[in-house]
Length: 611
Image (tube, rainbow, N blue to C red; front, side, top):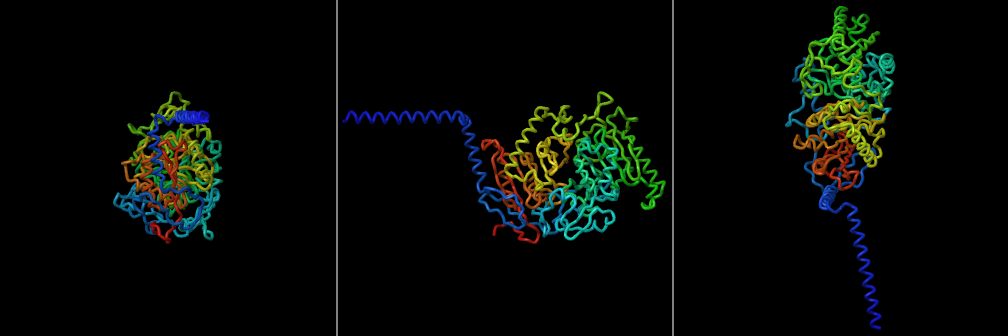
């Protein structure tokens, strides 16, 4: 009996040993295949960091509108400071275009209407409240024609421009019938007249500039032609005009042709127009026309409708003499000829000019050429009375700067600035790789928030746009993207425009040239890594809160350390937060932080403290 029993024990022991060896070999193979071997210490660190940074983060975010104060988000995470609401008088605060500060500056060349930002000690470090009764704007395309009075409670234009059909007031909403001073038959009829000369409808014209835009009716109706217009007007020239445009889902910024260069690169726009914008084109030796020429693409069009054209009919209404009006028109046409523009059309109130394709086509060469100056280096640079030279060409038929494909082909085609090697780090291959990468990123965003790409988020901003890959991946008639290239980043804004997108230069240490609550979704890719040690994260985040609508969303994509600092500050704001891994997995050091701004208005509980 004993030998038999001892044999059974040895047999059982052998089975256990064999099973143990099998398990060990399986685990060893899995360990080697996973790639966790050599880099296991790095992976362990990243896992611990992910655990630490995700402490107390919401398991899910609610992107649906609620229109009620939902309280603050409680968390055990570090809160540097709890931010109170600003006084209700700041509900339409624009830091760098405030009226009180503006009046301290000269009126010559509209200097007082330009950007004048507060010094550090005067910055508001509180949360800008929405006006009482604020409501989620109408969805696009209905928003083009309607806006809630509670959101922009100003009736001034309904009285001053009553006969011109800029805006009407009906019940608790404003209605925008598409009228304008120079198009009494409506924006559609005006655009069709322009289209009889300019190829607006076939994709040749994609980017446009509207100087002195009013409520941006022209830009709003150009969207039907798949044309993106960058509309601008000064703050308070007519009350809330730019605010009305953005409330309706139409691209616009606060701006003016004054003493400094416009914040756009050279050769940016396929078309520019002034519809009774009251800019003195013939004054200052044509300085303002020279600035339009700088940003107008070779082969592009400029439209002037209004004074001094049709002066024979209107000179008495304008309270001007025939001689004065005639002299102004002659001066404008003399200047345009020197700029190498050709008049293509004049009828009634409208004149249309086309810029030549290159310098070889010009009848005369300008004497006052801008020399030794980068035409894309414009931030706070003084506007000079000189002509930006055409890029050089090898043949008389070549388009200076490079010919562009028609939109939408142009969106993904290699931009001329990249093809010509003008962006040092970017090749045609890396450009296409960047496009593929952003398609992947945007797909991941949509998995996190199914409403991205719908009319829920109409006005979108990319705070560090680089080559415009995020906007290109989002491209849809339902949305538009303001591509911001920070002044401290590599200058790629010319590439953005060559793709048929719009954007602007900006320094995020200062306030952006827009009203509060004008963007539905903000994207910040590596922005805080870029601005590390440049200015306070607090100021950037408070500015983001100012320009973001209630219940709007921010997507941060950055390294762990800057995102931790962002989280600590954002905890004290009325934002709900969620940190998630990179779409390629937890071992990628780049993370994604999503914030949803809570709905609250002036007159409600204005403390961010938990009850």
